[in-house]
Image 1: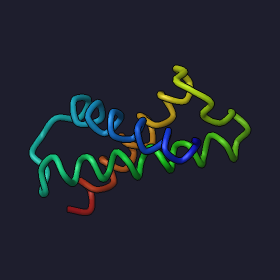
Image 2: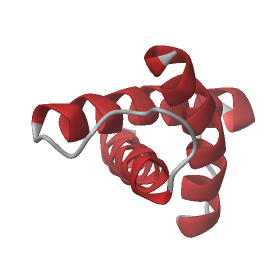
Image 3: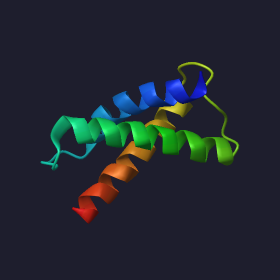
Image 4: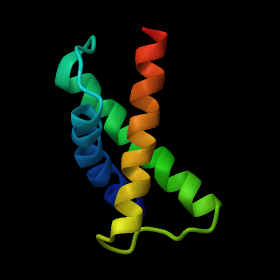
Length: 81
């Protein structure tokens, strides 16, 4: 269930990243959702690689890793655009 949990976390994290960093982005909510999913997957991969654990259900540490990945990707996307 790991990758599906990160995708789910990513959708929610993308919305929270958009709330944390407001502004007009090209692509609207679809791109924000895709960035959130990618950020959740990246946050999960980085967290697992660093030994911070894996998703075994909803927990705050996993969710914060997904949000951090989404915020980082959203900032990177804005810098590129």
